[in-house]
Amino acid sequence: MKKAALVTGGAVRIGKEISLNLAQKGYDIALHYNSSEKEAIAARELILNTGADCELFRCDLSSPHDAKELVPKVTKSFEGLCVLVNNASVFENVGFHDVTPEFLETDMAINFKAPFFLSQSFSAETGGGLIVNFLDTRVRKNPVEHFCYNLSKKCLYHLTKMLARELAPDFRVNAVCPGAILAPSGLGEDYLLKMARGAPMKRPGSIEDIINAFNYLLESNYVTGECLFVDGGMSLT
Ligand SMILES: NC(=O)c1ccc[n+]([C@@H]2O[C@H](COP(=O)([O-])OP(=O)(O)OC[C@H]3O[C@@H](n4cnc5c(N)ncnc54)[C@H](OP(=O)(O)O)[C@@H]3O)[C@@H](O)[C@H]2O)c1
Image 1 (tube, rainbow, N blue to C red):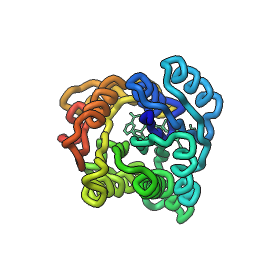
Image 2: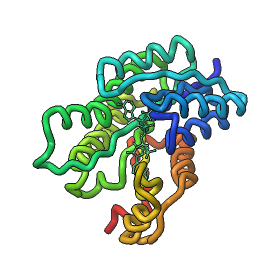
Image 3: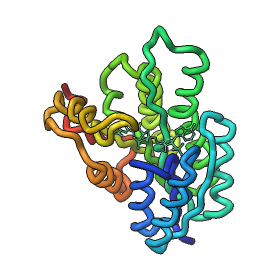
């Protein structure tokens, strides 16, 4: 049975590169997207060119119920599903005093509840494998900008550790914590340079740095519960 991976938010940016990397390593790809349909179709073409199979799965992860139903849909097509990458995320800069109940609900649903229920159904539907959560260098500190985003990633940090215990020995659960890698859409290189200036390595990282960390977690069969900071030391300062 051929190995397969589900990557959430796999149509663009980091998720797309992770999907391509997994395809090049021989995994078939269940590529999840929400609004980026055109980009998902283009990413599928690139993946098919590597010789891997690829199917697209649309799902709005703001609904935890829909998130829970995604894995059973994927395993119908890909029986060998053994890698789940929780990459999809929203990154909104709303201060604590401006957060509404609806906003908190949506942020937590996409960034935390979706990975929670995807992990639950992934571990129930498959015989074993690897979960990689995408966190953020910010989880080590307590910045109050992007309040709900940071809170949701901190929850996901703890979920990573708890699931590493709960799902062992059949599953490994790890995380990548990126620093300044890609500027949010609408913001240019200046944003990244400014963010990276305060980090010991004083420069932004690259997608390749993220792929290297991801591949370490993919290939290291004795590593679980690990959160790998790929941030030029940013979380130390
Ligand atoms: N970029 C960085 O430098 C950086 C730094 C720190 C942490 N990270 C973390 O690394 C991961 C990837 O970062 P990125 O910058 O590549 O991500 P991104 O562009 O901000 O978003 C990734 C994906 O999330 C999906 N998404 C958003 N809302 C959704 C919803 N309601 N339902 C389903 N999917 C939804 C989007 O899918 P569609 O486009 O299909 O809607 C998008 O492709 C994220 O978890 C992020 O927090 C990134």
